[in-house]
Length: 156
Picture (spheres, rainbow, N blue to C red):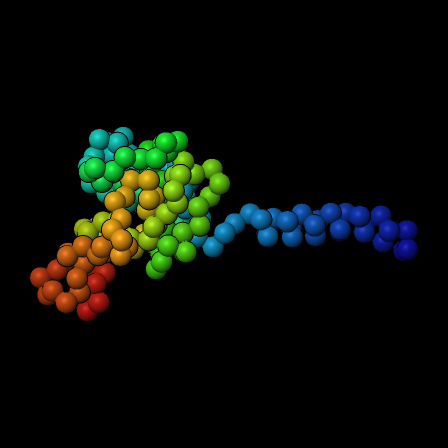
């Protein structure tokens, strides 16, 4: 019995070590920034688009976000559709190491129509003009305006 236990012990230690390493280094809480695919027409589209389900994204949400007019992406930045996730602040957006986004992510409203309207999502800062006070909430997402029809606004 003692010999059998001593032969199993190294295998057990290896399994536990592998599991611990996988759990501590494999994921962050809200990984964003991996390249994904919204669709063939999105590259020419000047509107934001969220594709879901996007199986290549942990959140299952892929964002096409066109560069704001007047914004020059930083050197080394590569425009791509990127995995996104819902957030409440910039700290919620955990950039994956392989992301082509150079300057990190900001938590802002990505779209004003559809099922994701007025929800804050992680958006690559490479393509956003961000005012000093932070991203501006669009007028279409003002919950105090009864004419706004987004289903995600309080009281809708």
